[in-house]
Image 1 (cartoon, rainbow, N blue to C red):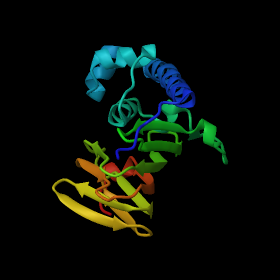
Image 2: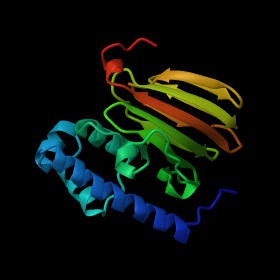
Image 3: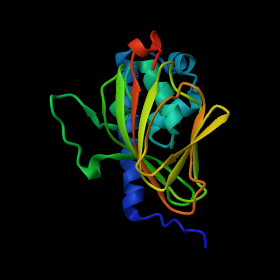
Amino acid sequence: MEKKVNISTETVADVERISATVSQNLKLFRRQSGLTLDDLSRKSGVSKGMLVEIEKGTANPSIATLCRAATALGVSVADFVGVAASVPVRIVPPEDTSTLWRGPKGGTATLLVGTHGPDEIELWRWTLFPGEIFESPGHSPGTLELLNVEAGELTLKLADSEHVVQAGSSVLARTEEKHAYINYGKEELRFVMAVAELQRARVRTGL
């Protein structure tokens, strides 16, 4: 039987909180950069209409859209959602993390904490239920992802190749090309992931 997804009041409130935070920060960073909506659209590749909706707080942008806008503004996705560390130590409690993707069967991708841009290091927690897949168009040149599978079996697709990662195993991958995380198994898949998108890595892309 297929798992049903119940949209709780807490989930709706979390989405609204994230939308409001992203809306406020996108406007702030864009104005600080001296960019118009047209300028940012050309620089990021995100349509002006989508940027308008994000700034109004009425859009639910994909992770890829947030990444493109953040890169164009020289900030990080963590800056957008308000979980970037700006002091020697910052503790982000569970209620302040940001779930930026929800799968059709209840899977989630939650940004736990990250650095300020333009150098970006982010820590994510992912859950994919059987049959779920998350596809990414790829990141900036030299972007690296480090993953550890806690439960289930991850199929990591890079371009046209697939790599199976068992529970307890870890992987280092360059994800500048299109890629996907897939749960082909019959059990819940859980993994943590660190993403490193550094300015110097865009010049030196060796692992």
